[in-house]
Amino acid sequence: MARRLGVASVAGRLAGAAIGGCVGYFVFGWVLRQGFYAMIIPGAALGFGAGKLSREESAICGVISAILATGLGLFTEWQFFPFVKDGRLVYFIGHIHELRPVALLMIAAGGYFGYHFGRGNNRRVGRSADRPESNIGPA
Image 1: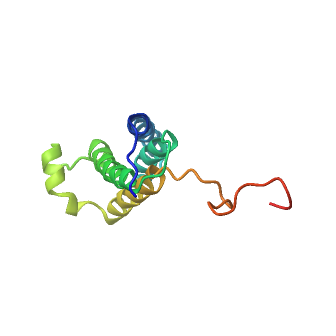
Image 2: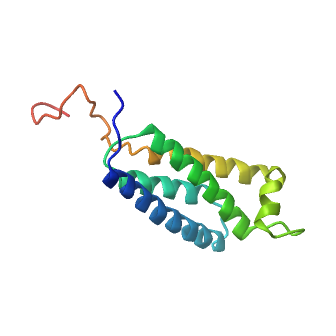
């Protein structure tokens, strides 16, 4: 049976995505000024923010986070590396296929991490749903 996400959960995810996306954008710029290209950061930070401010796990929210993370990666690439021929966003979108392969791979990886973190998977490692936490015995 499908559960509906509450308004508080959706608002938390949106706020977290916005905060994480902004942080990721500015961290990317800082890392770039240090001489490194880390285009995964904006999308992963967006997903991380969305997932951390959520109350439950949701694959649909993960997909939405992945789409937003990929869009943020493309926007960040355009802001920092616009095409020389035409710097408009419309031109950039029409010529995405001309980006460097490493840029496309890192934007896609940012989208993947946006999905993974954006699902809101907050379960602890080593603890499963069928094994409740216990203070008896080794962990």
